[in-house]
Image 1 (tube, rainbow, N blue to C red):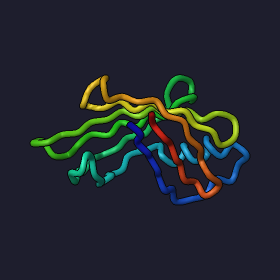
Image 2 (spheres, rainbow, N blue to C red):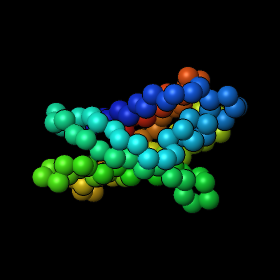
Image 3 (cartoon, rainbow, N blue to C red):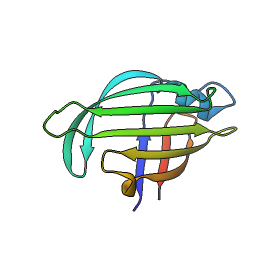
Length: 114
């Protein structure tokens, strides 16, 4: 199974470390409406740096008490534009996935999960 995560960010990174600059823009809290398995969902996301600032942890919590969806996504940037990521969610460990990706110069993260 392959999942893709693309996050359009407001400002383009202006440093040589494209991945870190892009990830910095995901730190904080925001609402993120979207779709999970074909169903519309409303989520609140919190992004914070952990483990000595090496990984950004995104915690996504569903806002519908009748049908909650929660996920934790850890993303680490390598030198330059490369990323490694781990997706875990309320469907359980059997649906977790590791991914690799890149941050482009426009600040867009693209991660493919296998």
